[in-house]
Length: 525
Ligand SMILES: Cc1cc2nc3c(=O)[nH]c(=O)nc-3n(C[C@H](O)[C@H](O)[C@H](O)COP(=O)(O)OP(=O)(O)OC[C@H]3O[C@@H](n4cnc5c(N)ncnc54)[C@H](O)[C@@H]3O)c2cc1C
Image 1 (cartoon, helix red, strand yellow):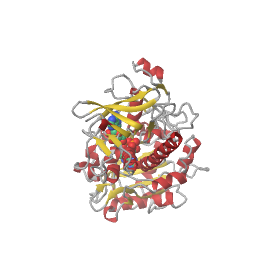
Image 2 (spheres, helix red, strand yellow; image 1 turned 60 degrees about the vertical axis):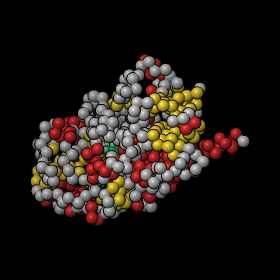
Image 3 (tube, helix red, strand yellow; image 1 turned 60 degrees about the horizontal axis):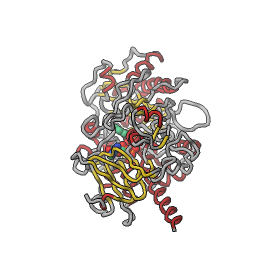
Image 4 (tube, protein in one colour; image 1 turned 180 degrees about the vertical axis):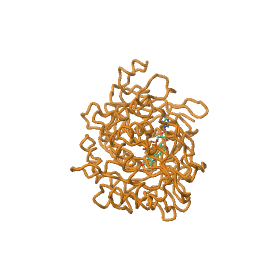
């Protein structure tokens, strides 16, 4: 690669969910050059990645960074935080459940200083998303899940919802409901409509202004004074390269690797970095703080008869419940159904698992968990994985713990309600002997898992908010030519699954980048 070829207008670190969107939008202008540097391989020939139903086979393998957590005294210390190492990022191995964010989630963002991220603005960016987001096709709706939707609706006293997103984008939102999910997929082939499928495949090898470096790992951001000028990276063959950015470096490496890269580049808590032998580039103590997740637990049953095989990805429906009274209309408990034994944590606790085809689970999760954790480096060695201390179930009021207890109880009520009841042979985990709140809490927290939604570690906030990492235009505070655009900038997690919010954020990030460049060029004239 000649020197000349290694200078681009924009360098994007991470061709994941947000990075793919930004790369596509910026290269719509033939005069703008973009280099995407992605740690994982191309997904175009990876059948098990493209076929949505095979999602579980991608977890914990060579395409998964497989982060662990620090010890969680109140929760489960054994959770594996899967993060995809492949083009498209987590949208290439997730379940592609697609919820538009709720209006009140965005009201919360604006109140937290994220000016311009109001509901009307964000919904207009969600309208632009290219992924094929549709309610699950009729052929993929199996009879057991249909019965579950009907029982969940009756037991929780909530309506059956035909299209959750229609209520969010065209209605008044909703406070609770049960229904089949909307998924980003092609129902004819069963293939993903991930960020890479929708945004990268159509333009790779087509747009001459787009360069994609695959299986190349960015180790450091380069600075000239307070301006980011490029990155150093290591290719698959071990070659060290430097890629320069004429205008900006955009970090879209995800909620774990974005703060990690900033810290390895000297952007973070100067004192802590100094103790690890990392020279401070810019003291920004918020980097890695505000780590959030949607924690969940699990109840598993054995069925009386084989579960029908038609499905999109074995988790096709959801239930939302609002327990509280008061002004906030949002639901405060969410449940996914799993038509398979989702048994990693129950097995570890000694529970058996029903034969394949005879297990069904409900996983209550905490949509707005109150526990907050942090991510930090334990060494200056760039190879060392960062420590993830989610501090699960540590909120002083015990809100998170109570939510899981309530969730397990509501799940049992669903299983007691026909027509789903007739599918249930026995409760496998936690089992009928676990009954009191104390017992349910102990089991629920030890068997807890993640819905795989870490976020918030490069929090966006007002320009004068010293604890924020990026300003509302996603620019790293106090530095020039450097933005972060991915789930790490979320001030708070949206109530439902966050991928649509990440895609919409990518869409808006591209607009902000273009606007700022026009403004800069205007000033320069
Ligand atoms: C198993 C699983 C299931 C999920 N299911 C759903 C779901 O159904 N619905 C939903 O809404 N959300 C779901 N999520 C969450 C959702 O997928 C993520 O929140 C979202 O995709 C995150 O997007 P991102 O752009 O922040 O990061 P990512 O998509 O993770 O992108 C980061 C990219 O950066 C690359 N990278 C990282 N560091 C470097 C580096 N130093 N150099 C080069 N490249 C680098 C990575 O390889 C990756 O491609 C799920 C997540 C997982 C893991």
